[in-house]
Image 1 (cartoon, helix red, strand yellow):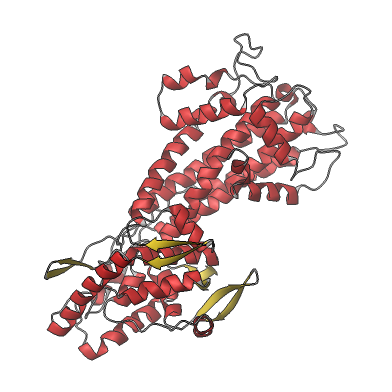
Image 2 (tube, helix red, strand yellow):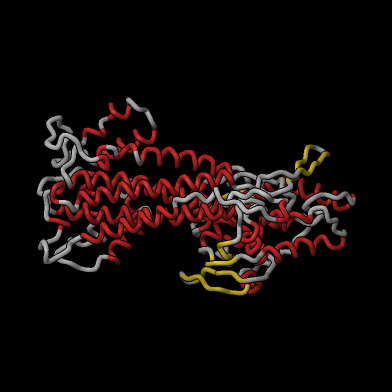
Length: 507
């Protein structure tokens, strides 16, 4: 098993996912350990000096002007975690919590949060041991950090609350103290600044958005693959994907989408790139297809770049800067998740658009005017409904996505007596975007069910890539030989698509 060094600077989304899924282990780098010791020494100097500094010997939020006595500083940190661990709602998935923990450890490992290396060591040991604190999803405002969710994480590090432990292929709930003890770990007693460093950051937002981005990168390819299959199924034209069209509007994502579609159609005996196309032009859902997933590809490139900067950033407050013998503790706002929130809003809209254009292609696949086959691809028209309701379900998915596409960022509630007066609502937005990707995967799966059925009725050979996809779909969804319930097959195909099985066919 690969051991990944956590240094606060070089973590990738793929490495973080590998750690959260138990495929790799993590340890703190020597360089980070040294930096953390330097910033910790600065915090301890302040405690000894008696100076009043926010986050070290003061209250929090609106109570930041309240000075805490030296003998109560440790109690302050424990009280902070306990009081803030009041989230509600469904529990986060254990692997999402582990991903959040990896991001929190990496942020603190930058060495400017004033925490001891032991704090990161415990987080990483819990991740390596597959000990996932039970974290209610709802509670973060996406500013001041993901306070409530991260407090539940910190609570388990203190040996309080509950954890899920992965054993024998199952997640089992246990008291945190027992889970730590069984793994040979000791609960931590938080010192000055350490509780605040654990809970004041963007790690829950990052966890949700990381899974979202990885899902969407898979689904952007699946959208192109589904389009190629549907184009063959209606005997459409390849002309709109001509490289010269893309070069005349040199948007990166559009060119990638068109090139992928053409490659999947290579050596087709069905679709044509000839100029004497009987229909003259296909509908927008085919002819304008690269212009829809193209911007999504561009959006994902920008979001991945921003997110990989974020997961390698210090996002708590205040931060401890050490230069030689001098140290300065500065309050700022790196905990604010506006960047993540705005990206999540855009991705939610992107999910809606990809699903909407997919549903329009389903409509054409089921219409004899376009497919040249029986209505709804039924075996016996009238007696059977065929795939009629597959389209209805896709339309229902679009309605769900329409609701989810409403921006999270336009909601703001000032808190903490107005001291914290603007929030991003990024946690809500990022989780919403993650839900949207799962709905999108089902819309694409429904289109593939329909295109595969239509391709069964065509004698000519489909393009090489399309033929490979068609064969793969048939390992999950059987041909339609009469009306039957399709739920299990449609959902299984959706899971396989978002799980990357389709992408893996092409390396």
